[in-house]
Length: 111
Length: 112
Image (tube, rainbow over the protein chains, first blue to last red):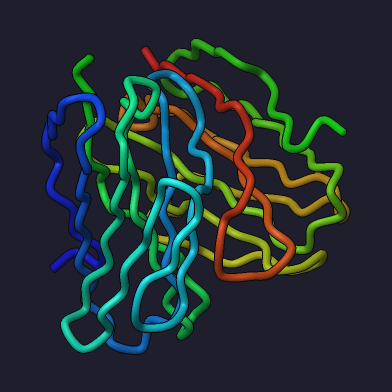
């Protein structure tokens, strides 16, 4: 089983809608969780981090963490065409100090 | 403030050739990482350096070596390139270990 699993998509939403991206992880000791945005042909860009159960909001982005169910999600409100990108989930595994990425979910926001 | 820089941006090698990918950061970060990204595989950690003077293997270290030359620079060496090493290579850095906060622009490597 992979450390981090994401639905590869593609996910399409109309402009102005809420985009919901999900990620599950396998190691219960994971403490830190991250979301990155990667435009085609570009490098990943860190957009959110979350460490505690519950929601964390930053502008139009909300990260949600549920450690009991081992999933982390990213909500993008009022989606814009400029949000069209691949979104990568990443998880820190404290033992061995490893940092694993999921394969990413491709999001397209349709004008 | 350039952030994380990588050289070269593109490279074509023949099987068996060697090369070194260079990475430098100007943010005084302690931790640096090398990842490769392949279609459908996501980002996979090759090697990382939690602090100056230390390096550790990641998920896919075979065929690679690294050097943490100083706090700024972290290089990745392919001793004998193979077609399976055709990929996009990203260097990243962070102030704290266990995460990659800032990525370089990437090196697109093709091994024929």
